[in-house]
Amino acid sequence: MRPEHEPLEREVGELLAAQPPHAAPRTLESRVLAEIERRAAQPWWRGGFSRWPLPVRIVFLCASLGIAKFTLTVAMAMAGTEVLARPIAWVEMMGRFYKASVAVGTSVLSAIPPHWLYAGATLAVASYIALFVLGATAYRTLYLNK
Picture (tube, rainbow, N blue to C red):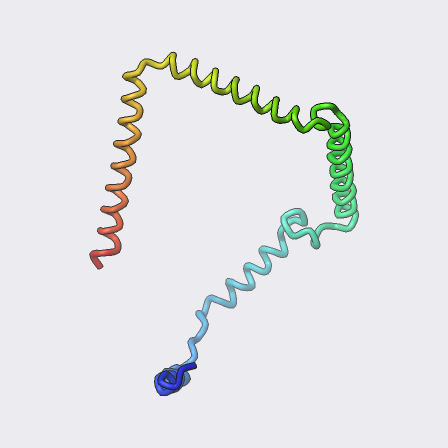
């Protein structure tokens, strides 16, 4: 704390201490009690894990462990195959996928007439400009003219 701020802080503290406490709304107690009753009336599966019955929690944990074991077993089985055993096979597979994707994209783009592509690009740019203008106008209207 800086020494030159002490008088101001003291004055603000005294001013705040002199303020009367705020009273709670009259309906607050009834709303809180109604919410407590609503939450207590919810079925067990809508509550947290700790509210579940013990047998259901045990079944859930056993099922989760079974799924985890199955996933690890499948991953270990795949690790024994040649594709995962040879790291270069992944690179080769990704290269083939990339070449196939480029071939499909090229054939699709060559099937579209050029004037459609130009019209689509023009529409996209015009939509972007319109969105920018509408956003700037809304900002200017809502926030700057207050």
